Length: 223
Ligand SMILES: Cc1cc2nc3c(=O)[nH]c(=O)nc-3n(C[C@H](O)[C@H](O)[C@H](O)COP(=O)(O)OP(=O)(O)OC[C@H]3O[C@@H](n4cnc5c(N)ncnc54)[C@H](O)[C@@H]3O)c2cc1C
Image 1 (tube, helix red, strand yellow):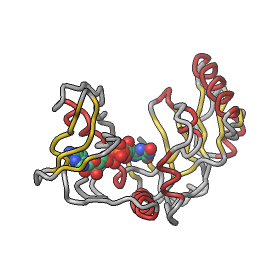
Image 2 (tube, helix red, strand yellow):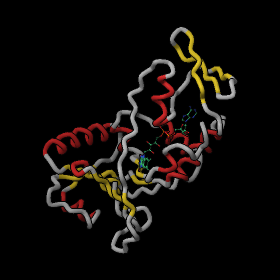
Image 3 (cartoon, helix red, strand yellow):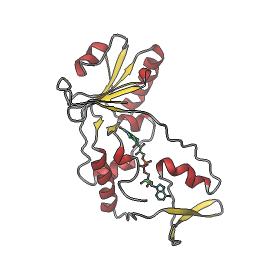
Image 4 (cartoon, protein in one colour):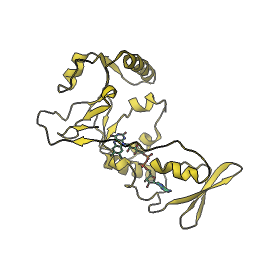
């Protein structure tokens, strides 16, 4: 790790599919959430999350996803366009067939969440080496057995997890391992304060228009 606050996480906008996203991607329990839970203060705000289905295919897909999430214990409610407008009055809903509302989802403060992950990891006995890059991965009989740091020292380990985010592909390549991981560029827009926007409104995602909107403090953010 270079530094705790150096990766993408502290710079994120803070949309956190704490339950929905985890179950949706079939990840089961999210280790990061457990680590963060052992420390206080991720800045999590349970403002809720609404995903919009604006065509028949998405409606079909999100109903299946909702069914899977309910099986995993997540409260996902299929709501009407009128109910979407009730939750987020500035949302245009004339083409919305249904919204999928997850009241327990919300947003975090990315810097606080990063600090909580680091603190939680230390609370559980972990050691964080900052300003230290992994230069190489040790391997024996086709299995990773440790890492070599840039100063040449080695750390032996039963397990090695490549969690270097958008740099994971380069690290894997050193051993001829193809990790199909590519950072995708996109834009976000931070508005001035909008008094008509209530910071309690949920995060709204409309994949059909490649957009989501959220309201950290009294501002709207659009991606
Ligand atoms: C502007 C922006 C907004 C975003 N908004 C959101 C959002 O609202 N919601 C959301 O869910 N996601 C969002 N994301 C995406 C999210 O931040 C990332 O998907 C997530 O942080 C990736 O986590 P990670 O731990 O895999 O990687 P990172 O957080 O990037 O951490 C990787 C770490 O590995 C370290 N590293 C790299 N190479 C080495 C090496 N050789 N040796 C040792 N350490 C190394 C890096 O220094 C870094 O600390 C956003 C991203 C950006 C950039």
